Structures are given as structure tokens and as C-alpha cells.
Length: 136
Image (tube, rainbow, N blue to C red; front, side, top):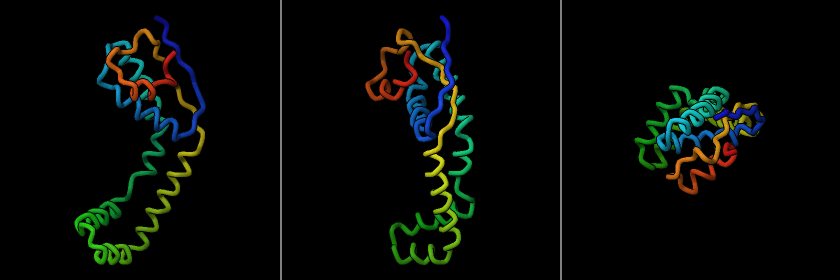
């Protein structure tokens, strides 16, 4: 069976969606299906690494988030924490804006097609829809 591969330009958000669809079927199917899923998953993960790095909050922000969580909805405490750490909160907002901008950018990814005859019979409609772009 000849494996068909293609290089395609897509928006980062589309690549993220495709990766989530691939993750949802990682434990389904036979060896040939698993090989195709793994090939495309690996390719997309590599291309999305800069997005992943940009999304990751700083250790300081994670500590602040933990304190906010511990406040359990106490708006007074949360507001105090945010005011006391305004620069950190602003830095995180800018980080999120950068991620939102990145999601709109075009990237090139390598896709490994999945022939219809090797699709597992146990896929549900949601999984099948997520893989639509990869089915040949």
C-alpha cells in the first residue's frame, strides 16, 4: 500500500484543530492506521512548537494563578493580587494576544493521508469529521 503524503499550507488554528482530532483517535485502530496518525501528529507537533512555547505562562504567573485559585472566587483578594502583580498580569495578556495572532498565521505542514479502507470501524462521527482532511 503506497502511503500518500502532501505538504499543505494551513492556518495555525486549523493545524491545532487537526492535532486535537488526531489525539482523539490515538488509541483506535490497527497498525497501519496508527502509523498514519503518528506521522501526521509528529509533523504537526514539530511545526506548532513555537506556539506551544509562546502559550506557556511564566513560572511567576503560574504562582500568581495558583494564589488566585486558592482565593476561591473572593473578588477582593483576587483584585488585590492582580493590582499587586499588574506588570505580570499585563505581560500574560500580551502573551495571550501573541498567541491569538499566531493562530491566524499560515504555516506549512506535512500530512500523511489515511485511505478510507484502513479507517477503524469504531470511529464515531466526531472523530471522523476531525480526520476529514486526512482521508483520501
